[in-house]
Image (cartoon, rainbow, N blue to C red; front, side, top):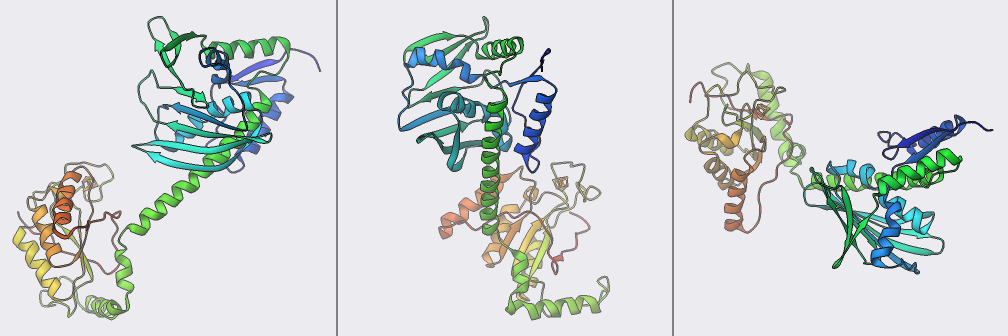
Length: 398
Ligand code: SF4
């Protein structure tokens, strides 16, 4: 068929919110584009700077074993960095080494929201060990560096003149804007009816690899969160322990028999295994979804004596753990540190549900306890009431 080819330059990799069969969907889209005679290219411009790279670092020698390092600084932290940044190194690999496969993929989390992605790119009968370092950076100009076999160039910009440089050791080279080269390549392809450098085969190849990396990160993330969850205290499992099961049944039986507001109901023979203790109604947040919004900042707090008395009474009836929880932010209680220490002195387990704005309060206590017993004693599971817990009544006044 002949006729004009409509142009379509994708600013980013086609990344469709990661539906199942992502690569296949991209393939379908590109196939439709082909039917409509669209010239499609993707803006993955860094392969266009390879000539400049070789001018400053010398010719890239492709050996049996090679190394590629790329450092990029995407705008957003976390998993979204993968579709935002990884297409660029994948394009450098495809353009310089040809089609390949990913093996030995692994991840590391760096600092807040950063990550390192390592894999071996196997092409022909050779291999390239790849390290992609992603460090999110909100403001431009973003740091960028890359290089083969330990010859790393860093990019710098003269924003007044909009000039781009590669820096290698003491050498500095003004380079042609790779974005400009990418657009020119695309326009030539449209004019000549040819495939652009970052065209169909390139996009499809890299989509498959991008999907593999993103899926790999998903598994890595699940693994990490699984390990974190294992470390959290599981208060509800205490209720299932054989030693406490009968107590729990007796307690529930007592609860069912009594109207909770009846003044003469007395105390149960056994206390609950775990209680939720609302220390204060004071809160430094005003979350729109707060279920306690009618109670917060009502000027109510348990006194230190009330807390101690409650803990003493229930402890003497077999209490095992206390969760300091809401209706407010527990770390705002004037005696928060002392209360935690008192509960720990009774050898009770403790949970703290906090909005996280005053973690230094908790750190201080952990540091104190570490000094005392040589190990940490707190974990912070997500707040959750388990069945059979007992919420202490809020006091009427401060
Ligand atoms: S931090 Fe908790 S208690 Fe405070 S307003 Fe938000 S949800 Fe409510």
